[in-house]
Amino acid sequence: MTAAPAAGLVLAAGEGRRFGAPKATVELDGERLVDRAVRLLADGGCRPVVVVDGAVPLTVRGARVVHHEDWSSGMGSSLRAGLEALRAEATGAVVVVLVDQPWLGPESVRRLRAARAGGAFVAVATYGGQRGNPVLLAREVWDDVAALAQGDVGARAFMTARPELVTSVACDDTGRPDDVDVPEDLPGR
Image 1: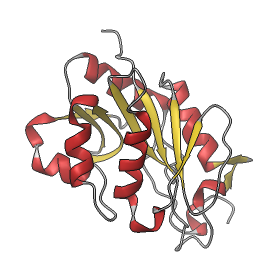
Image 2 (image 1 turned 180 degrees about the vertical axis):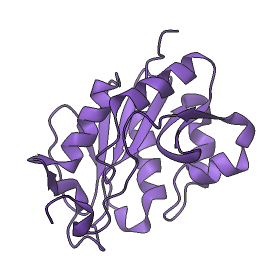
Image 3 (image 1 turned 120 degrees about the vertical axis):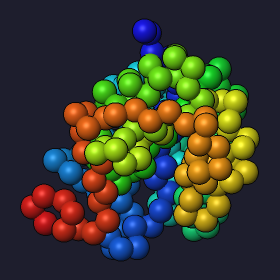
């Protein structure tokens, strides 16, 4: 089955309060986390890729950056800003990643796109049977996802409200869904 076309969206607006710095600008193996996230989506076949920034202005090669003034209100508003920025694009879906999960693999993105080609409206990567990231959202659900995305809740509220539209996609062998929350979460710190 051919994978469906999809845009990519990196949520990178936060200030990294627990980390002590905006995580988008933190480096791992000489690469900023935001650049790793953009590469993940591009390597997974997503075009175009949009990055939502906020606490710190970003310039990111290979992506269009959208500045979100109300970034401090939480991930939900950043997701809404990203979806709004993609409305003019000719894409039927978007794959969303968080900037602080640098060990995800591009195969997870390809698997979500294949699930969309198979008819999924929402496809979510699972690890050990638990939902994680990335998440694919078909254009048909963007308005409903945006309506429920509030505070620090992104697409999860929609997935809880409409479980019949959610397809779980096993991604255990594609990478690790670990978050970078504090400096000690990165090797060598």
